[in-house]
Image 1: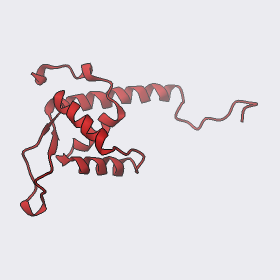
Image 2: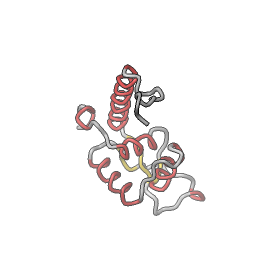
Image 3: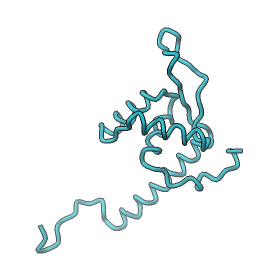
Image 4: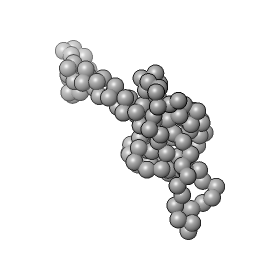
Length: 125
């Protein structure tokens, strides 16, 4: 049962997996809406192709991080061919664990002053 699984077991997530889970963190979405959300949130720095996305969806479904949603938009706005996905409770725990892991990594980088503008060493260009 996914409720007793340790989220840490699935970490680290790939960047693409992280973006898909983040897209589903606030609402159910269909595949194309996930792709558009990721592009919008990343200022188009991250683009998920359909093949990549649906490969990830298959894995995330199998791992119990997402599930197909039964909620549908109003009929006038819906396309019956679309499948909507939602984050599961376990998926949310995995997402939170990954964000915390990344925050710890950034905190370490800050102690090394890596996020300040790096000046070239004397003699370097």
